[in-house]
Each structure stands twice: as structure tokens, then as C-alpha cells.
Length: 170
Image (cartoon, rainbow, N blue to C red; front, side):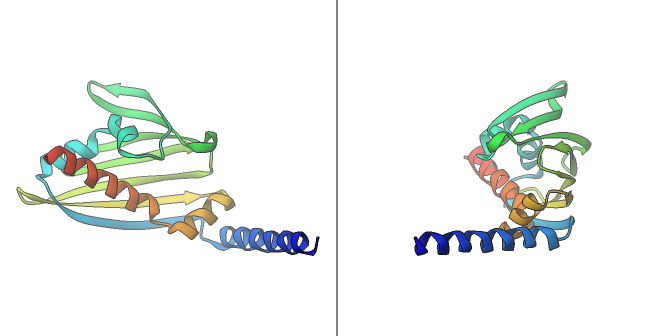
């Protein structure tokens, strides 16, 4: 019985620490990551701009619904994640082979923000920089983001684009 009481106390302490991390973490976040990829700017642009391929590129997306299109370009969409969480995104700026800006319009987990993808480089090597400006109102989500690294989304997104680009260049 003492073991279970001790285990319960430990769980309570860990829960309080987790709550404190989220409570004291800043609501706003601004971060940047970049990588030079061996692929032309045009080809890398096509990979990153292919919003419809997100469910294939990212394993965290459990459902994907296109809400608005312009020809082949997806302009607004809903992503579903585990535990019934959802987010709606919209492309707010698209400059071919130079810049793509996506805004998270709303989410069920208290997060909003913009992600800017900037492309630069020569014929064979392209540098892709991803800038995130976001705010997370949910203390729980902020705690997870702080523990995993506030830049975990942009690192994961860059890695998924790089994998898709590598598959495309084969």
C-alpha cells in the first residue's frame, strides 16, 4: 500500500511540475531553422508547396480536408491529429520559388501562428528557411512544446520536406 501512495505522490509532483512548465513558458514563440538541400529551388518549391501531400509527408496528421482550392493549389485546409485535435490553415502569401506563408487560423488546442518558408540558392543547392511566429494559449500544449523544444514543429516540417525532396530526386 505504501508503494501505491508513494507512486501517487510522485505522479502528483510530476503533474505539478508539468503544469508549472506550461504556466511559466512564454505564450509567444518566434523561431527559425534552415537547411541547404541538394535540389533546385524549383523542385524544392514544388515539394514544399504541395500542401495536398502533407498527410503522406507527416505521420502526425491523421486526417486532412481541403476547404478551398485555386486550380491545383490548396489555399485552406483542416488537419486532424490524434486525440481529436484539429487545426485550420490558410496560405496567405505565395511567391513562386521564393516565399510561402501559411497561417494557422484556429486550432482546438489553443495555438495560432504563421510559418514562413523562404527559398534561396543556386541551381543545385537550395536553402530552405522556416520561420515560426506563434502563440499558444493552452498551458498543457505550451508545456509539451517547451519539453519537446519550442522549435519541434519547424524542425519536423523541415525534415519531412527534406525526405520528400530526397524521394523526388531519385
